[in-house]
Image (cartoon, rainbow, N blue to C red; front, side):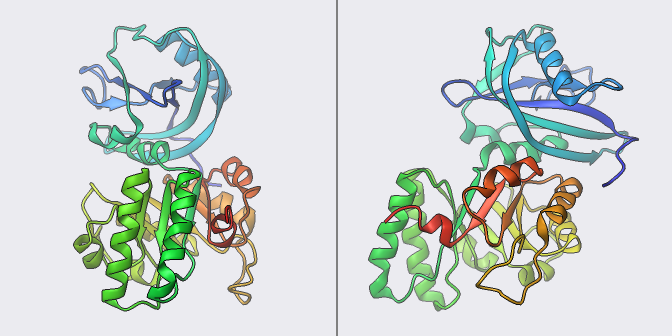
Length: 321
């Protein structure tokens, strides 16, 4: 595991209320990164458990008593003048009314608006983790145009059941066919509040006004900088720590690691295993999904090991119908 002994260790919280809103606090202007919004929390004292530090800091800062929380993401980040390790937890239940107990400005905001706020650079992966779901559906081959009505009806049913992140992967369609199908999938996603990632070129993703672009590992290796603006989601497929580091260097918002377990679709591919997945989450600082042989039951394992959740084709596509 990486050595973070020289980092300032901070416990931070993504706090959600009963309406699904997220609590933000504005940093006092005289502090490091002052004036920017942040997720509440504070320093972990020597010998203190992160969970204890989180409870203590939120009591002191917000006057709340945490009753349910779980790890979300760990983010190591080096500013020019200091290095921080953010241990971020998701707080889903608490007692008392949250308020700025130390005089700071606090604000409940809609989850979908989080990217509209100015955060310290180290907080940006927290924004992604707070907005992304546990399940990332990768579509199976949609077939020829005569099969698209059934494909789209099934996809709509999954969105209605709560799928909130979809990658349209249709390698066998030509440019015109892919564009036509992608427009329909994007429209479905916007109707149901589902983010649609296109597995295509940056130029086509921009032309179709997609929510985001998913880079194959081959496409990732050809890039030296982020190909889309910050308003769009950018993801990448990675199979090694080297590829993951390159993805982070060009500024992807999240990545998929595969294959974590053996798969029938790629029988010759060597599985990373959960231990390697965990080591890569410790190095990353961005949300990571486990792909390869994943089932719904693997979500808890992925999250315990520092991941965002699972990405899958068959197990998630087969949730209905």
